[in-house]
Length: 390
Image (cartoon, rainbow, N blue to C red; front, side, top):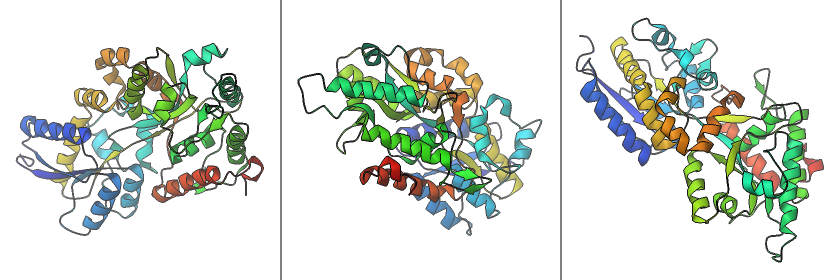
């Protein structure tokens, strides 16, 4: 009775397909929910605009009840004492949620100590794509599981370019370098490094140096290449790169590009490889549902909407529209046909045990920009492998 006709406001960072789907979710929930809760939606177009708008609204009565934001945004707002700890909602016997159905690499991202500051809304990952057919023709029977084999295959692809009559492709063939922060972070983790040590940032560490030295040596030997005008997906489809970096959003575009290039190559999603004896790594990232402190009724209404969004039916519709991970393991039961027609997506799902979270710190919002800038600068000015530490 206390919730009947209650109105809550939700702000999202989306436009286009995701915005359209979320609008349809809001419409369905408003029409169907048993409490008569009414959700009002505002789209803020992107995460940066959403963060600025939400932060500006927090001291006012106009602040939203629920937002879909990045986990590092939620951490900052929680530190300011503005975000609802969702632990009691999740554990509630009547209105709770089975967290065991959500992979730990998704679930753990939104923790601040013992507090649950948000709950997963969408999860994506950064990985490598490997052209299995071309690799086989070069004499490689399986995807590289170590950094050493990755180098061997990338260099083999580059050398194959030297054996044809075209000189313009002589520098192509290996890994097409990607300098996004998530890529830099994945390579650090693959070599056993990272950005944190005892809860504080530390970049100048032996395994980090080893990772970036390895990558610079790939470029120095011609086994990794860059071209400002090169589209990675087109290069992959045209056998100009044996490896490219991609995320789940990219997979349908890669499939279309390969079909459009009239080749029948098979290809795989693989993790970032590290030294022998280590497992490959995926970096998992994405947005989360954040509920702000308000009245008990408004917080419960926002939670009930979030819980409904996490139902298997809505979760499956998110996957089929956005091509991202299902948030619940049980949702895979509804995605059998999708799995058959999207094999690389299924490969990425199978790799989730290799997934690793990003730092659970509000400061990651700016530190990740610095990491990406530094990584890109290393390539832009051709830092030698021996100068990586400097």
